[in-house]
Image (tube, rainbow, N blue to C red; front, side, top):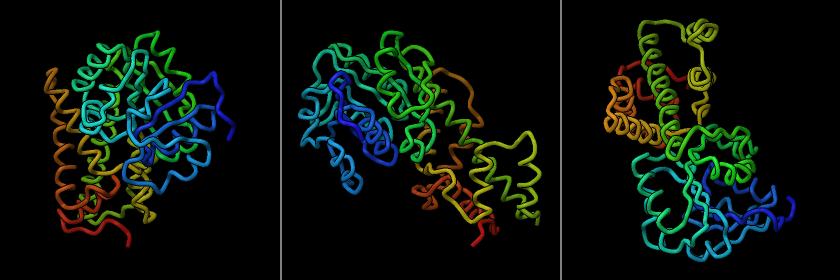
Length: 305
């Protein structure tokens, strides 16, 4: 990794999890100085520290000399705690700071946070992510950015350190909205696939034949390949996104639809299917474990074991 270049912004980072680690590693590799506050897991910090990252004891300390802060956490409660809670960013932030929120969060909460930061002269940009932890490590994530033209120009060089495709989707807030719509489409597809496979199994249909026919037609999709295709190979980790996170994102989507309001029968049904799977104890498992939920609910054998 190259040494940080003084012309590049110093980045504060909160959320060094599955996605955040790769993002932080690429920021360091692209010449950014990096400051962070560790949370619970310290297993993935050694290489970042060896590359020159600086660990701080508090968020206030992390902000000293920092030009921008990246948030990469699970969702709205975590973002709100980071901003408003004990040792929160809002109280310590100085005018001119740039906050980049890459989480999947509720647009209404993000709008309130944006206004609170603006009152302190701080810019808040929503830039949620797409793709996987493997893409984060490779520096080839996708991001959808909600920001003014000027703020997009400011944030783009930072995002380029770990993103392959950086799309300015509209004004502030539109990044979070588009992310919820994208995840709604992905998770309703996953829920429908799981139900269809349960019916196919109970009817005695050969699942490899189902995969062969549908995989060669218009219904084929990346979700279909990563869930049913990989499951038939005995792999439930093809789509590395948890059932609990899917439940959360669909809840955010249905809440958004209620607030607009728009009808959301399909999203509500998919949300409840993920609630049901989580209540079966599968919240921490990846999306393909929706097949395991269907096994329990319908008394069928689906997953090769």
